[in-house]
Amino acid sequence: MVRAGAVGAHLPASSLDIFGDLKKMNKRQLYYQVLNFAMIVSSALMIWKGLIVLTGSESPIVVVLSGSMEPAFHRGDLLFLTNFREDPIRAGEIVVFKVEGRDIPIVHRVIKVHEKDNGDIKFLTKGDNNEVDDRGLYKEGQNWLEKKDVVGRARGFLPYVGMVTIIMNDYPKFKYALLAVMGAYVLLKRES
Image 1 (cartoon, one colour):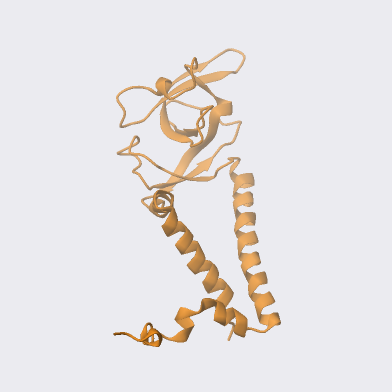
Image 2 (tube, rainbow, N blue to C red):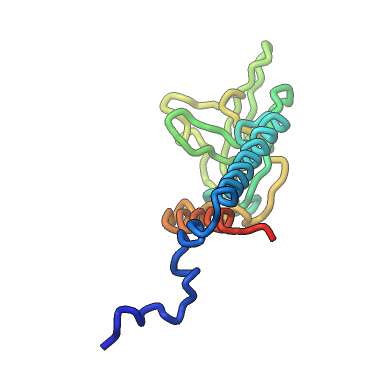
């Protein structure tokens, strides 16, 4: 028979009652911690917006979600993109593009480029690890991509760093737990 008070008695009280620490803070400390948290979030957003301006890409950093570009890029690789409109698109370049009707951008290599006299460019893509080109991925009736479809061009990568993002998308409970722990740390961390 176990007494109700004995359960968890071996754990320190602070680990059982996170909100108790918040109650122990005076209002000034609590406001300081909330402001500190808000500054961290706003700094991250400013850095992201700054990268968008510097790179010309609406999404300057993306994670490779499939194995279609192996051996060049593996699932979980983090890609750094630029998208300067004046740069011509050439065969062999790796581009990230969005297709109408699909939410997630695709990372594939340009295999053919058609340039008209008026400067319009149309191109065809294919994953290095795929047997056929991407016409089956484009919207119905579309056989070529245009510059407006391009999110960015791969300029560098960090191998497997994006696996954290993939794990958080595959396991949403892990994502919320990680965010809760990080938020609690920021709010409860006291300056010495």
